[in-house]
Each structure stands twice: as C-alpha cells, then as structure tokens.
Amino acid sequence: MKIRIITFLAIIGFLSSCSEFMEPYPNGGYTTDDIWEYQNMVQGLIVQCYDYLPRNYNNTEGSYLDGATDDGVITNTSHAIRRLAVGALPSSSDPFLEYWTRDYNGTYLTNLFLKDRNGYNTRFLVDEHKNDLVRTRLQGEAFALRAWFLWDLLQKFGGKGLNGEMLGVPILLEPIEIEEAEQLTRNTYDECIKQILSDCDSAYKYLPIAHRDFLVTNETDKAYAGSRYWGRFDGITTRAIKANVYLTWASPRFNPNNDIARWDSAAVYAKEVMDFKLTIDNVTNGFNKTDGVNWFNPNFPGIIFASRYVNANDAMERMFYPGGFQGNGVMGATQNLVDAFPMSNGYPKEHPKGTALYDPKDPYKNRDPRFYSMIFYNQAQAKKNETGAVMYTFENWEGGKDAPGPINNSRTNYHIKKFVFMGLNWSDNSPNKQPHSKFFIRWAHMCLAFAEAANQVVGPIDVSKYGISAKEAISYLRSRKTYSNNNGFLTDPYLDEVATAGKDEFDKFIKNERRLETCFEGMRFFDLRRWSTSLADLNEPVRMAKIIRNSDGSFTYDFSQTVESRVFKSAYLPIPYQEILRMDNLVQNEGWDSWK
Image (tube, rainbow, N blue to C red; front, side, top):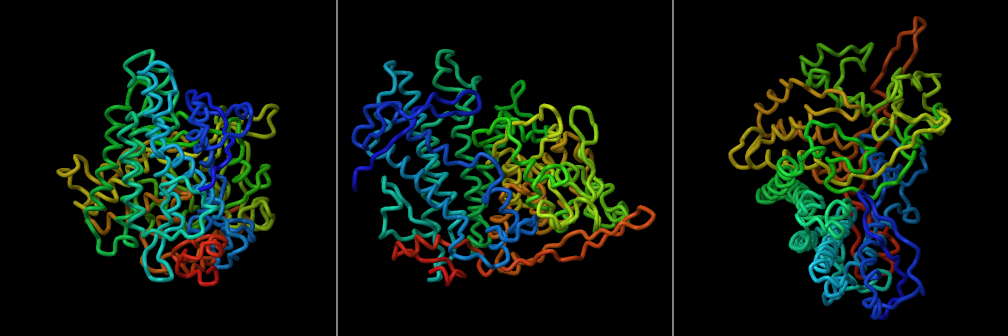
C-alpha cells in the first residue's frame, strides 16, 4: 500500500459540548510513517472523524429523507430525494455517494489509528496515569467510530444483491483508501452486523461509561476525562448502537425466520441505556424522563449521542417556514402523517372515543398535544416563545399566502414546526438564533427500541423478563412534556386498551408512536424498509389537505387528494454507480439493474 501524505488538524479537545479544530499543524504534510512522533497529529486521526458527522437535519440523510416516505413531500420536484421517491433517480445524481465516500474516509482514519496498536502505544502525556486516560479513551473512540461508520454504510447500502444474497458493504479493517480499492467484494449482511457488534464491544472495554464530571472521582483527571468530552463516543453510546443494530437485524426484512434472540438482544441493550439514564444520569440538573426535548440545547440531558453543534443558526427555520415568513418551505408534512396523530384523549380519530372529539369542519381541534409542537396547519399561529406574541398566521386555503404554488410554499398545505425555534423572528433588530445539532440517539429512541423488541419477546405488559414492560416504556413518551413544553397525556386509557389487545395490535401502535416521535429525523425511511416485506408497503400514495375558504369565513377540507405517488422499484438504495463501474466485484442491489 502506498504511503499516504496526510495533513491533520491539531485539536484542543472538547469544551463542554463541542470541539473545534485549530489551524493546520505547522509544516503541513506528514506521512503515515512519521505522524506517530506528534501526539497532536495522532489525536487528530480520531477528532477529524467527528467532522464527518452531519451537524443538523437539513440534508439528504436528515429531514429531506422523510420526503421519500409517507411523512413528507419535498417542494422542489427536481430534488434528488424527490426523484428517488417517484422512481426517477438517474445514476448521475446519486445523493448518497457522498456518504459512501465519507464513511470510508472515516474508516480509513480509524484503521490507521488502530493498526498495530500504533495509536494506543503513542505517548500523549508524561504522567503515566493521565496518559492512560487519554490513550484508552482514544482507542475506544476509534473502535466506536469504526462501528458507527460501518453501521451507517450498512443502513444506507445493505440489501439483497442482484445475485439474490443479502449483502452488506465491504468491511475494511486495514487502512486502505476506498478510492484505491478495485478488487473489493461486499461482505454479507450478517458479517457486517457481527463486525459492528464486535467493534462496539471492543470500544466498551476502553471507554468510560459516560463523559460526566460526577463520574470522575479524581478532580485533577477532569482535564482528560469527564464532561469536556461530551459529544464524543462513550460506553453507553456503544450499548445504544447495539440496540439499534439488533433492532434492525431482528426486523422482518432481515430476519425472515424471526430469530427471537435478536429481538431479545435489542431489548436488553436498549434497557441498559434506559437504566443508565433513569438511575445514574438523573442527577441534579441532569436527566428527567418527564422533560420534553429541547432541540436548541446541545447539552440536553436526553441525548445519548449527538453531533457537534452549529451556533447561532437558523437553517431549520429557513428550511421549514413558508415564503411569507422569510422561509424556503422546502418540505411539507403529509396528510398521512397528520392522520396518524390521535385525539387529545389519546384515542385514534378512527376509534369511537376518538371520533367523538373529531370535528371535520375544524379538524385540528382536540388533537394530540404533540401535534401542535410538530406541525403548522391552516390558521395555526407562530407565537414568540418569550412573549406569546403572534409572529405569523398560516393561510393555507386556496388563494391564501401559504397555499401551494410558490416555490417556497409546501405542496401539502402543511408546514413543519419540529426543530423550529419559536423565539426567532427575522424582523427583530437582533434575531434570536439558537444552536442546532443532530441528536443521533436520544432517550426516546431507546424507549421505542425497547418497546418494539420487548413486545416481540414477551408481549406488551409482561414485566418479569426485563423489569419493565413495553407498555411502560411507551408511557414514558406519551406522558412527558411536548417539544413546546406542554403536558402530554396525563391519563392514557387508550394505552391500557391497546396493550390488553395483545402483541400484534400493540406492535402496530408502537410503530405509529415511533412514526410520530421520529418524524423528519431521517429514520422512517429505514424503518419502513426493515418492517416491510413487499414494495406495496413503501408505495403508499401521499395525500395533502385541499382547503376552500367559504364566504362566511369557515373552511371546507378535503383530505383525499393525492399530492404525490411513491414509485419504489427496490426496497434498497443502490450501491453508488461510479463504484460499481470502478470495482468489478461489487454486486448491485436488486431493483437497480440500470445501475450495474
């Protein structure tokens, strides 16, 4: 293998919640042979990997990916993800190629650090004890990052090949650049899963359980351990990764024989993370299971793992607000998603007790309190957090300023409120822009993973195996504060009813709860695929709200209008076309015959 010339950026470590790179190390280029003489360069191998992680939801693996599901519609009809959704994505416009390259670049750096234990054996500090703190943490991070990159690759590119075999991606455990590799083959899906799990276990042996000051017993160690490394991988994060990996591996598409042991492992690891939050991380000003998510606090205690934050940022507000409020209206929520929200008593609107509260002439009244913190609808008001003053009122009827037509208005007559900071008004003399980051894994995700897996193993209400039931895990989410800090369901008779109905009904219920909780986070695209066994499950038409304003000021709503059809010919994403051309031994995923 040729010696790679590398220019790394020195680091100063993480301060509280994020890390920033300094200027390039003096004298520029170093080869892979001599970087080991410079401890800052060796640390840079790991820190640079974090810069490969997305830092917000405004990308094609974040909110835009929901535009290829039944939750969202992208306004720009030429957007690559929209073209994917309608079966018109050309090989020349692959929106996922950059992630293939990114993940393998990150893998290269971790493999360089791990090879022959060179990174671990680097002398970082003179003091033996503090040197051990640094090198063991970095060694653990290297394994965790390699697991993360492979998991991201597997989610995006794993699938049944044209040869009929369930395949993953090439596993690289040596510092080989993907651009130079021409003879690689895809490992099997199961081999990739096992490598991810193995790397998580290796990472766990080296990492502290969490980066928290209160877990560091020696005060002088806090310069090299503790909360200054918040935002970097720790032990509990590797448990969360394993929970998510097992959850996918246990799902119907990847578990045709329904191996219950996989579901059990998903439940065990998710419960381990939940227990850590409930019993260790619930210190003063720490985790509280009743708190709603604060998307603008990069130190929000409900985070398991999140990206570095972008400070004073308004990307999500620009993305989701309509043109009338100086936004770009790039996506709209679907009527399908709106219909998935229950009524204010917790019952679905199709249930007799839900129907009793539903008014077709005022369909947004008496809805789930979570609905009002996620979706802007006709006549909804954007109120400023600090004062409650109305900043904007939505007019989504035909002829209204927020109706479809302009390029910066949603095509569905719904706009998205999730991730939007309600204290921001660009008309203010000093607009209040807040930090934004991506919460890759959080408390709610683990509750959902546990509930789904535990229900498959023991049903909704059994507590004997795991100490809590699937029903209790879901109750944590439905009863906590909303994103707008309003009360959730203080009483929840429907939860009792659906849990009593048995495993199958509760499974449908959990999937709907997961849909509501994770909308626009880029997760439903993969959830639909792991749950599905046919393309019909992925190709449900998506609907909009057609709204007519009557002469008396009332409104007539038609929710039957299809705004876009889904035309997926494959349940899997394609292996990047340029990689198929370059590497003769790569097998393309089924349904992408024209990309081979």
